[in-house]
Length: 278
Image (cartoon, rainbow, N blue to C red; front, side, top):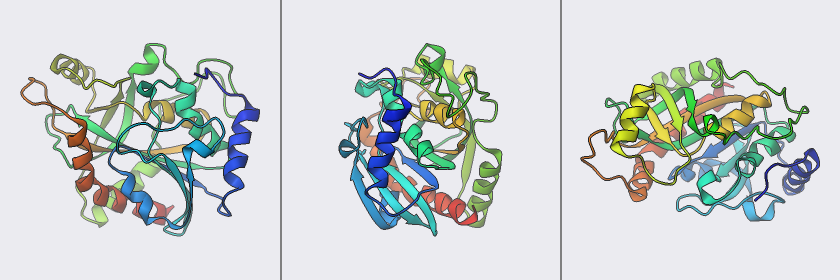
């Protein structure tokens, strides 16, 4: 398990990708559980399995294909991660977030990060789309912060401000696109946990008290590193299951993947619309 990576190693991974595509991506997109179908919309794609990129960890989770798709979407050059790496798979936080560093090394200016999330807010329903307007970094508060270790001054300062982690202009664009396309959206706070267990009802009641609307096992580390490197972020959660505050239901990964079938068209509409307006 790697604790951190050097600038030289990040650059080596970036060069390996650059050597296999003529596209110079400016937007990175990370697709969460069950949401990988959006990668099929990329035009003139170059596909690279994660396993063929130096230092890049491989995804082991069902619903995460584990490859880069580089090409064009709404006439914008994009690099799409069809699947992601999670801390609970046994990787370090630096391995989980290496893709963000590589994107930054390649000159990517925007990051659109998606995930499948469980509802905490009782008003949310499976199939809802939630724009993330803030997050709670419970992983980082407990010491699992991807910025731990030597600060890479080439990307950002030692103590980055996180008060506007989710870019307000991109949020406004997403709201406009949703309204124009009659896609109903929610907005709220995402809380990131380490996983891989789903939450107990008591966990969810606690998370509700501290201000979370949806919960998942990803996104926050990636956004933290993106903000450190001055990459502008749009976060979108697909709500895959209803709030289980009283323990009356059982949550499964199959349920999460099934919800993705409903969510992909909605999230594709929003992402494509935002890309068009960038």
